Image 1 (cartoon, helix red, strand yellow):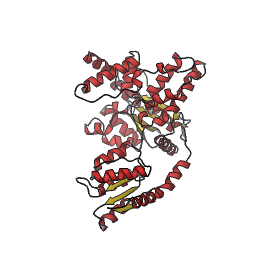
Image 2 (cartoon, rainbow, N blue to C red; image 1 turned 45 degrees about the horizontal axis):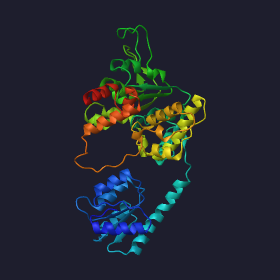
Image 3 (tube, rainbow, N blue to C red; image 1 turned 30 degrees about the horizontal axis):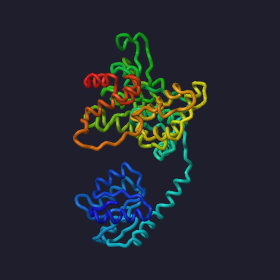
Length: 435
């Protein structure tokens, strides 16, 4: 509900509660958009005449970003031109203030009934819980599975984005092995693990004598993946010089080995992945804009685990089954209370952190998981009164969280760095500075 009148919002709130609906109320369009971005909303009720940004702008924004969410417009200043405009943009109902509870109820029922066939259609769609090893039944994962399935008969480039630990390589493998050329090679390359001076040679190959130590001809990853898929993880680590050669390889479908004069034709699908904001790198001139557009024909953004909590239980059961089988014992008994705690935790290291945690539980426990097996930082914290005496600086919050992660990983800095999404060198410096 969006209205700059607090009295109207309070009236709407009471009416919504009487109708058994759960309202979110705000007096500004900016706050309304933030709610839309972070909450599953079934209906938007908005006023038109509001200061700064009005309801028409909200309806226009929703028509481009949230076209499936129905809109009921309410206004105390009816205007035929405004009514026509918002209806063209997608508003389903137009209600003039003041209105009665019955009039509001009729309008809401009419709007939701127009949405009902779509809801029924979606609910009847088959829910996929596992797709080429990727697990999830949430709406975001169903959308991801559908996107992967649509790539099966083409070799368009794919850019996969997502936080560290969300499973970008698994998605890349699913794209390849779901394709019509799944029997061809899948060659994964971690661009961040190869020294910058060697990356060009590793990707494109080199001929004998191309540089000191090049004693024989050696093909690169592009040639090794010919006919199949080349997966370039952490693509943003590539230097500008390598980016230029990548752009040419994609455009011309050919590569030139280091030290060679003749190019070779290649038939490779390229999938790239990053946990870095490429748009910021383009603005900072550290990533080529033309290469970005070549890589981003199909874009897949993997949501973090905290945004698809309904998948957590499925993942817990899958990892429990997997690692118990590897250990030659029956799956651990993990009761509903334990699963609820694990589902509520934010998992900053995403699926990788959850998988490692369940693996550790399987190793350390024989039959079941007890509440004491769950570290305190994963459990609910008692809320504190926010006052000047207990508010912490950003640096202090960071220090405390790093200490928690190190404690949870038994001071394993490599694992802690993975969970925190930083490298070991950065972690060492932060620990040193905090001490």
